[in-house]
Length: 228
Image (cartoon, rainbow, N blue to C red; front, side, top):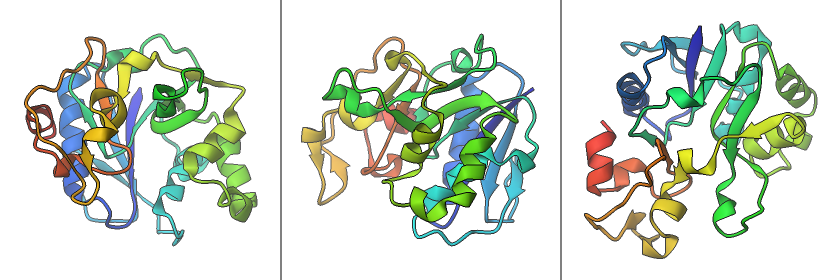
């Protein structure tokens, strides 16, 4: 059994982001799965299993991502997690096939500027249900210490560094840094200079929109064709 999981707390992203992720997964995953959203919103979304947890009122809502590793969630099988601000445009079976019991994530996108960078980006991850509970347990015990770090991915990497493996860089790319260039961003408008000439590398299946701009800010044909 495969669980495709996302997390939505607060109002930074609307339910449309969950619906679009649901649709992209349906178009590009052929392995049987259940789509689940861990959220503080009890309103149902068609085709999505709501896993409700009240907000812990963290100052930064991204800390709720650590709750994915709570063994009490009782999620079955392998878990494949996506941030809501990703675009899936090609088959993603490779993200879950032949992983045995390993914990996988993205080699952080600072790799663009520091080739030997070996830290985690947590936008896409996969692990076996019931494993990595220490990430959650230690967070509950050391919440204030954890929050001295920049974000959830730093905590996850600190706790699980010895067992995290990285997918090939080519499979999951930064839209802002690897597909486009940050020099093309107008940060005042949170937009890229528009172009019809965006080229996606052959083996890339997922583009990650970390930081600004978000997918709804962009009018590139690549985004309009896939983020729906």
